[in-house]
Length: 369
Image (cartoon, rainbow, N blue to C red; front, side, top):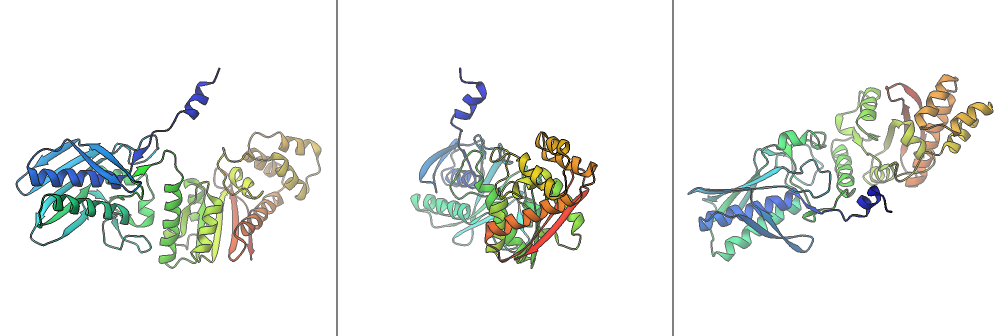
């Protein structure tokens, strides 16, 4: 009989919608309500992915000079920080012609260069911006209206939600970004995270950072900041499991020096040339770690057997510290540098630092191409 876990894996994941799609739908509902003076219970829009989608409105308020509509974002089965966020659009008449779009409460404001939105503007990315304005223009045209309008997108809980995102690091202050290139969210997609890495590197370059520190998570980033106190905040980039992708993007965008900071588990994989270090993508090779130990001078077979039979890479690190084989970590760091340079075919300087879970520096090495 198929296990419950297997059934869950085989079950088709539910697709959700982007903040950009939600903002477009609420804009259309609010604008139609402003024109017709009739409450809009739902709103159907055409998505960039090439299909129509209908959004249920959570609220619709109509006043003489403006209308406001809101919907609750459904991210489907994607673990999105904005899942269940209330997305609002307020539309009012303008004395000027044309369509004016801006962000209100809970929509971030860009403060650093390097993003697809200019400094000072609301963090409404180009595709959602286009979706909102084009949809509004179509509604005005369908009703034969030539008056100008103001559109304000807001997310009441946006500033709180933004604390769970990379927005502050990217220089987006005061709330979330209105995002999405497809209109839909693919469950557990890595594309959004990879896009954030590209943006983070762009911000670093725009901030004149020639060196960046790439880390696998918040803890290793903290250690990296302690190790490189003279670097600006923009120079620190969380790459997650996407080591190879991040290295290639650094080279592509002209970064001269990359410092990898992490711990035994994932960096023992990088040392072997594994550049996607998620636990499901590759497991720790304890025979490889035993070979590194031999390179460091370990000859005791009992200790080598302990390494091969270890449960985690961290456990191997503890064994090396316990027996005084500090050279093990330098060799492992050198392997990481060599594998990284091979992955991107050289062209930049790379160094690697290995830490314990508690923040003790185990080893460091660097290589220039």
